[in-house]
Length: 262
Length: 264
Image (cartoon, rainbow over all chains, first blue to last red; front, top):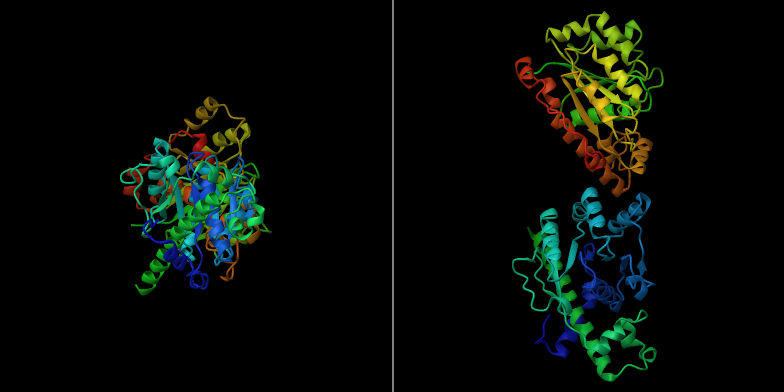
C-alpha cells in the first residue's frame, strides 16, 4: 500500500476505474485462501468484491467457507455458495469459473475446504485451462506465523509453479512476519498486499453481518450510530485496500501487454 | 527391431470392464504413435467399435473365416498391434481355438508377441478363471487387471487366496485401473469417442464437443494414471525384438495394491 500517498492523489488514482472497466482481456480468478482460520480470508474477499462493486463492475463471488459468518453472510446478493463435494456441484462451479471470462471471480476458500479444493484444481488442471483461455488465476494467500502456513505456501508454490501466488499480510495476525524465506513472492505481478489493523470500534462494525463498505459511504442513514471518526477510519481503510487491488489489476494489465508484445 | 503383437482382452465374466480396458489400450498405443487395429467380438452388434470405429472390425471369433481374418493377417497387416476385445464367456474357448490352430505355438517360436489382459471381477469365480486361463499362457505375457473404474471393491477376495492363485503364474503381472467418477464415465460413454478425443473436447467428426471442462480434467487425470500403469509394466516392451524382450520378461515388479492407489 502507499502510506505516503495523499488522500487526493489516492482518489484520483482510484478514479481510473472507467479505463479499467473497459479494459480488454479476460478477468482474473482470485482464490483467497489459507490453511488456517481467523487470518482474514473472508475480510479480504469482502474487500475485493466490494472493490468491483464500487466501480459498478460485474463480479462473481463464491463462498467456500463451511462456518459462519462467511462471505455470503455479508454480501448475499452477490455471492454463490457452491458445493464441491459432489461431481455435479464441481461441474457447475469449476466449469462456471472459466466461462464468462469477462467477469472476475472471487473465491473465499475456507481452511477446511483448502486441501479438497486444491486437490480438485490439480486433478482437473483448472489453472492450466484458465491460462489457456488467458484468464489469470491469482492465489491470494493470507500469511501467518504458523509452520503450517509456511509449509502449505511452499507446497502450493511447487504444485502450481506457473500460477501467481501472492502472500497477503494481515497485520492483525502477521505483523512483523518476514515474507522472505517462508513466503517468497511467487508471481510476475509487482504488488504487495497488506491489510492494516483496525481500531476496536471499526472492527466491531465491519464484523456485523449486514455491514458493507459501500453502503457505509453511500447510505449513511443505515449506520446512524457510527461515529465520524470510525466512519473516516473505515473509509480510509477501504480506500487503501482498493488502491492495492488497483495496483494488482494494473500490474496484470502490464503483464498482458508485455506478453502481447513478445 | 519391432515385431507384431496380439493382445487379447477378456474375462469369462461379464461387466468387469473388458471394453473399457481395451479402449485405454487403444488410446495408449495411439498416444505412442503405434499403429493398432482392433477386433470387437461382441458379434454382431459391437461395443468397442462405437468408440474406435475406424480401426475396429466386429467379428465372430468362434467362426473360422473370422479367425482367419484376424490371425492370418497379423504379420501382413500394417498395424503393429492387434487387439482383440473378447466377449464375456469366450475367453477360454478363444484360447482353446488359438491353441488348436497352432497360434500359441507360434508365440513360442518368438515370431510374434502374445499378451493377455485378463480383467478380474470381484468374485471368487474370477480367481478360478485365472487357473483356467493360465494353463494356456505359459509363453504369453499375462496381465491380471484389477479394474476399479466403477469403484469395484474386491470384497470377496481373501488376500492369501488371491496370492495363492497369483503365485502359480510366475510371469503374471498385476495391473490396476483406478476409479473414474461415474459422471465422467457416463459422459464419455454418451459421447461415444475415445477417451483422448473426449479430453480434447472433440466430437467423433472433429468438431468441438463442448464437454464439461471438469469432467474432461478428471478423465485426463485418470487416463494419465492408467498410462503410468502401462508404463510401469513396460507394455511397449511387448513390441521389441525377442532378445530384448527376454531380458525384460518378468522384470516388471508386481506391486502391492494400496487403497490410495486404487482410488487415486
